[in-house]
Amino acid sequence: MTRSITLSAATAAAFLLTSAFSGAVAAEPGGRDSDQDGIPNRWERVHGMNPHSAADARKDFDHDRLSNLAEYRLRTQIRDEDTDNDGADDGDEVKDGLRGTRVRDRDTDDDGTTDGDEDADHDGLDNEDEDDSSESCVADDDDSDDDSVADEDENEHGASSHDSDSDDDGVADGDEDSDEDGEADEDEDDAAVDDCVVDSDDDGEGDEDEGDVLGTITSFDSLTGVLVIAAAAGFDVTGTVTDDTEITFEDVEDVEDGGEVSRSDSDAPGTVEDLQAGVVVADVEFEDDGVELDNVEIYAPAS
Image (cartoon, rainbow, N blue to C red; front, top):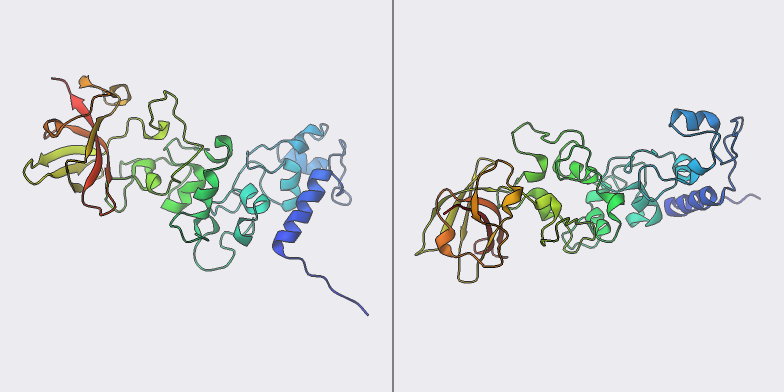
């Protein structure tokens, strides 16, 4: 009498990881392993490792929280933190058991939504974005094309991690605003609290948002409070300024196209008098109703 045993994907992955980290699993049959690190010499040479140094096996070249040895055993890429390009890091899918996803399958449940873009708890935030909020920056913020969109997030926006302007429309991927609401796509899916937001100058604004330019004020009606901004992406952003709207000033040192300004990063709030036609707007934030403006951040021209 024989009895078959079926392992779940998560159990199998856990077994592979345990074996990889303990070094209990031998290298492939017939593959010479000079440093006895569990990885055959030939594989190490192909992947830029040193077949005579066991230390390579313990390293994590792509910062995805999986050692090179674990990646070898799982057949994932040691220099690509997201082997299946689904927006979820390899380490998240394996170590965190990311909602039962498979590390080499972009769409584990075949529902048309890639694994990293699933929203298991239905809170409006993708699984991978929630994971990012509690992980070290080095594991999640690789940005190969310097467009302020992490490589792992490019797929969410139909963009390329190797092209800062994937659709060649003159707007960097990190500044695209597909729903024309004045907030960049990349900012909309950020977790509310993200430990990976870097603020080098401690001014309260993340580095990826420094120097942002939304567009230029076309008009402001002080009676109705209606503010119209001609966005650099080629559409108008319209919102209503109320007594509760906060008007702030962007740091002038971050304006890439130069020009002198009278105030920058000022502690003193702006007023509706500052909302003049031609003034450059860095960013706006809407209230939940999508009509009233919570904040307008501008570059104030020299007086």
